[in-house]
Length: 322
Image (cartoon, rainbow, N blue to C red; front, top):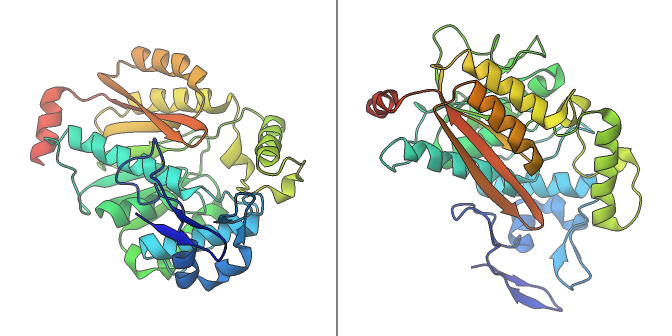
């Protein structure tokens, strides 16, 4: 249990409800410790209206510096940076996805979480931030392949990998040259994965993405914030695609059904609950043999993971032996 101390208030942090029990971010941020490992964070830490240390989550520089500190403290990543206006993800939520996927793999392995580099994970849309491979490798020693359609994102992710010894040989990034493809051109001949993860573009148009980002900013500041100053940023391909989240996941389901034996569990985040109907319909049409829906709660935000497999129980048993 963390104890946060200031000259005006002392608070003992309760565990945040809804977060995965192995998530190290389920308590309030310990800014004293974070500043110790990342002194550049200090100018951004102030007392909020509740007289508790925090940052301005509407300030993109503050959010990026918080991420740098978290990655240094928890994930052994001393060097991390992303270009301006690229997605700066909330690390606690990303960690929840990884830990839930570890439980999913355990369900196919006699309730034992498989660890080490023999576990291969495909991160679809790895982004410039490379967050999922960082968390998954640090927590479980998994080997990651990250794909993206953006050359700048791939170049930046590779710079992060090259700058941090703990990631060398553990993460490789591949450019998807055909944006309509999800797995083709990325999965090499004969290559198999234990898990595929994805945080799909949520919105269906640039206009909808801008409105959503402004709404998020208003929730944080109660004021209208220019798009260029939005806290989590994001390039067009990170924020929206034609048909939005539901269409992207449906396309992912269809293309995964064409490669049924190449991955034990396919999965994707689904932010909008109303999209589940169309996604489940697509999974039924694709003849997925098992489908799991995992609910997640982060404060006021509700989301879920949908995971599916085309492998029979016998093939799951063969995977266990491997």
